[in-house]
Length: 244
Image (tube, rainbow, N blue to C red; front, side, top):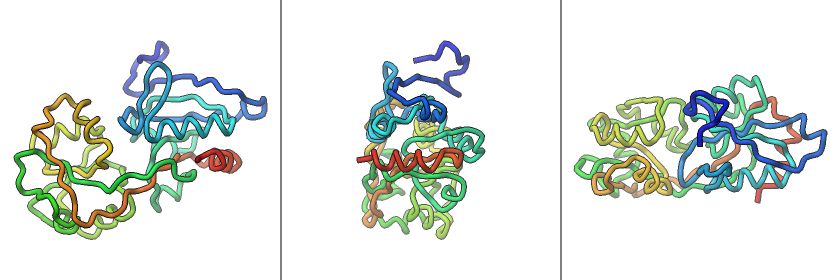
């Protein structure tokens, strides 16, 4: 749904979410950012749902915290939180040491299943059932990564240690999948929950895509609400109390 007041919906779409608020809370309104990413974040008819969208919105409403919901690309979200110019929060982010240095986090709102490698059906080099180390350590394979993105503490640490050949991009998963299909990279890491939705959103044939499971994939990472440091500790506490 395009915003009438925003000329470029790719940069920002704003939906106002009504909440019952006290006058004191109204002065601390949060800009709550999301990017369309089924099944985690699904915006429709002015509402946000999904595996992380639903619990996040429910927590804000239950805590009585005023917020407006903004459709914002993920890289822009992180930049806004890091800039700390406003009271900005993002939905469904991983926590890592770097981010903890410039942001605040709530309690987890969701835990992923163990990540997999996504490749093309005809790419026999990315084998199912291999260890994470054998895939990441294979210098004949190119890993497609998103700039500024975390794959969780364990996988981030292995990527740093094993230094796989990488192709870094600043686009969302739909375009990343098309890069894989164009054979500009061999594989990307992804939580299995979002594969079917990603394929559907990418308008590609499921027969052209293959999921490769790791024999020793680490447990899925927790996803959190991330907030700029301008967001009051009291607000984080109220959200934590409301998160179920």
